[in-house]
Length: 111
Image 1: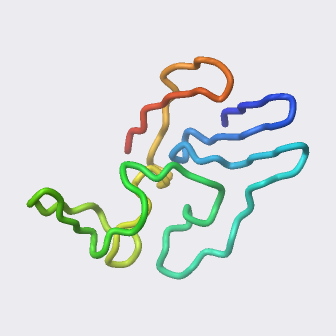
Image 2 (image 1 turned 90 degrees about the vertical axis):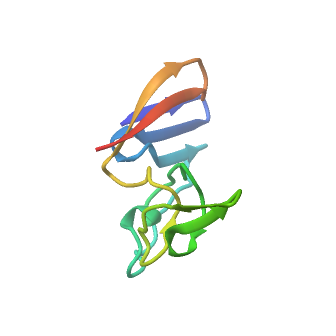
């Protein structure tokens, strides 16, 4: 886990779980919760907050057209693709640089 903090806030990030924001506390109050997992959807969607990369939202049947070409992305919510790929536990985010308060960059790699 990696901790980012200031006088009023603390964020806990898990780089081994796709860079998921596991906890966000402001003035002593936890702002993130978890929800019951819905059938057929990835567990990771319901715990903390995660980067939605390389795409956000739901892609019907895992396919979309852009500029005259059809693209396919992996389905992970029944027949659909949703919320990118980095929320899956097999994605690791490695910090590349640290430039001060709340400014981080990372590279996500899938295993």
